[in-house]
Amino acid sequence: MKIYTRTGDTGETGLMGGPRVQKDNARIEAYGTIDELNAVLGLLHPEQFSDDLGQLLVSLQNDLFVVGAELATPQPEQHEIPSIGTADVQRLEAHIDRFEEELPPLKQFILPGGSRVGTTLHVARAVCRRAERRVVTLQEMVSSEVSSSILIYLNRLGDLLFVLARFANQQAGQAEIPWKKPTS
Image 1 (cartoon, one colour):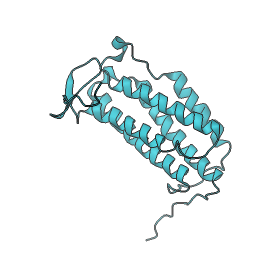
Image 2 (image 1 turned 60 degrees about the vertical axis):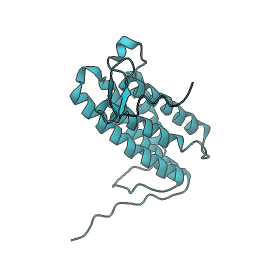
Image 3 (image 1 turned 90 degrees about the vertical axis):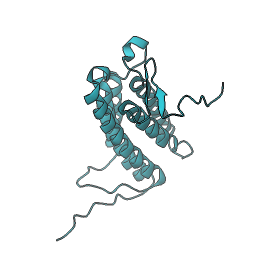
Image 4 (image 1 turned 120 degrees about the horizontal axis):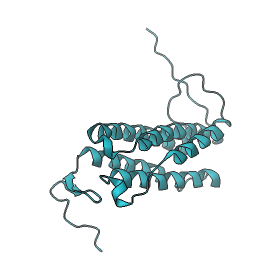
């Protein structure tokens, strides 16, 4: 099978089980941003960190494929598309709690940065927040076709990525840089 089909040469693409739409359609923006987030997490594969963290990142990437497929499919329940649900959100919350126990309490805003892993996780968090905004836009347009679990999952995922960035920086011995409020 060839990778190119030429069917998108006019600026359209096909949805899973659905019609062809413009490539800047809100649905394409939403799952395209999920794909971008998945690729940012993929940047971390060559890095050295615990097997536990590595397995978690792969698990998150697998979840993002589920989210992307669900967003790429109008009426996913009619096409037997797997979905993200409450158990997935609870799993993220358990990871947040576990990693946060290892960190000092946050008393002020910090600047994104630090080690390569920490910085990449901060970038992933920012892309996740953009994906969240794209899903909100899509949800406003086709509310009955977008599961509220996706938005909740992305909200928790952004939180987890922030905690993981802090954790990675701590493990690398990188001090957090506090945000300094400008003086008048």
